Image 1 (cartoon, helix red, strand yellow):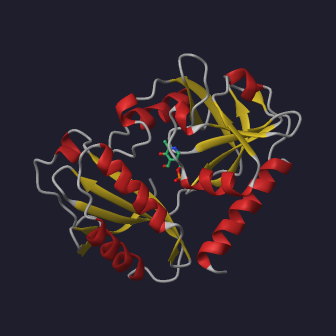
Image 2 (tube, protein in one colour):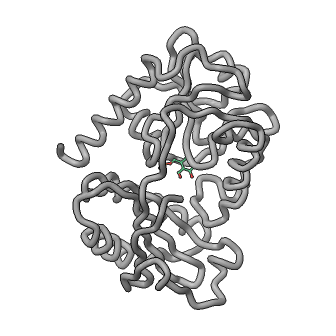
Length: 263
Ligand SMILES: Cc1ncc(COP(=O)(O)O)c(C=O)c1O
């Protein structure tokens, strides 16, 4: 998480250090709630409606009524308070109905990223849900760091490639075919992934790790990373880093940004 610039708690704008939550709240005590992270470019949010749509689906999946109208109004006010700059906005609603929004600095990402595979079984009843129960995702990154990599890559026990803890993965075969795990494999319906899939020819299926390990190039896709070139997986270097397919995806995502922000 980047440094927090300002919070909005139930509509009240607060500086870090001033923001407190009444307890008990199962959002904190049990990770019971939903969240989203959207990006703001020069004061203009990208695909915020899609983030709210997904947040609504996440909330519905765990029988939580999302206060979408209030959250939307509070998000607009918080974004306006920060001026024309780049940052992230985090949106949270807890089981007790607290609405927690924060403006955060963008995290620093190195130019390329190395991955370590971590065996992981998706929690079936939370498939596709951005719930606050992200401890497994956070811990996977620590395990990957201990293995000498920057980030984790979840792989199902049956060898099917899933996703990193907070991004999607794409790769190109030696023949130049772009691939990404299908949503049905147990991955989040990432908005960045969706923008790329809408614009490029992408094969979506359940792919084995072998397929990825023989890729010519790979990249991660997410709100904070956009298209982020992968350098190594389990210490094996990719033949090409930031190759033609990664550049094509970055350009496709750039078009989505321009279309949405009207640049
Ligand atoms: C598990 C997971 N997959 C993928 C993503 C990327 O989604 P998006 O492109 O909407 O940021 C995220 C975002 O945090 C995530 O938590």
